[in-house]
Length: 60
Image (cartoon, rainbow, N blue to C red; front, top):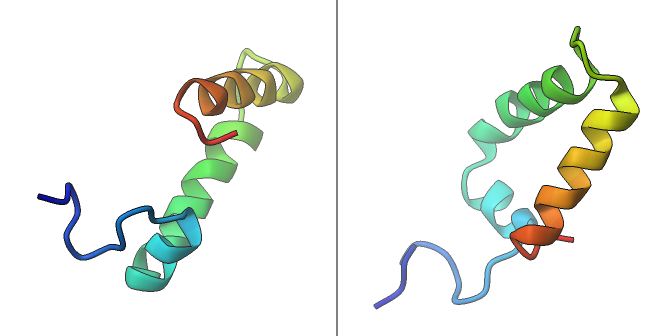
């Protein structure tokens, strides 16, 4: 049984965006807030953390 039956077997982020277009803008706004908003971490530090996590989950 597929984990997300409404998506193809090996979906990419673009497939998810196409299936749920109403959620694209809020997700990207949240992403920008996390990586570019006020923080004790520099933008470079946050980008490094994001790249590391992406690599851990196979998104990189």
